[in-house]
Length: 147
Image 1: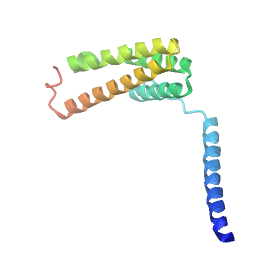
Image 2 (image 1 turned 90 degrees about the vertical axis):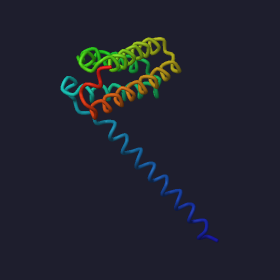
Image 3 (image 1 turned 180 degrees about the vertical axis):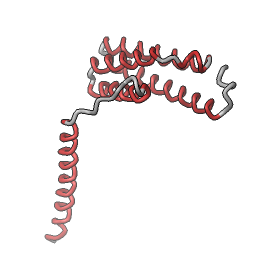
Image 4 (image 1 turned 60 degrees about the horizontal axis):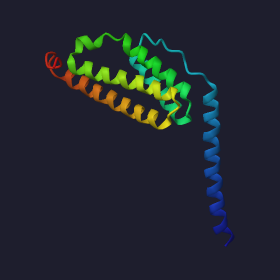
């Protein structure tokens, strides 16, 4: 009888120890600042970092973080010269992406969590659709991407 009681206690202690260790490691990792990256050297990495900052802001309802990350992302997108070279469909994707970013900044400034979350989802789907388009056209010959 006593041994049947010890097993759940042992399992519970093991689970709590694992959770505690994971929590401690996450605190230690949070204290280390992320390495500085040259935003101009890798614009796609910069875009991903800003997207992650937007998501973090959404999760924490930090509207300033959402807005500033969206504005940085918009600034990065406006610096790109690719739309003219890639054709009409690519320009449509980038235009939609920028409009969604502008809306995200607006609703974040209004502190509208639901609209910000929907804008982020739309932003993500637009990004994925555009990258699908790019990959499909990189696999084909160079002339078919100018639709």
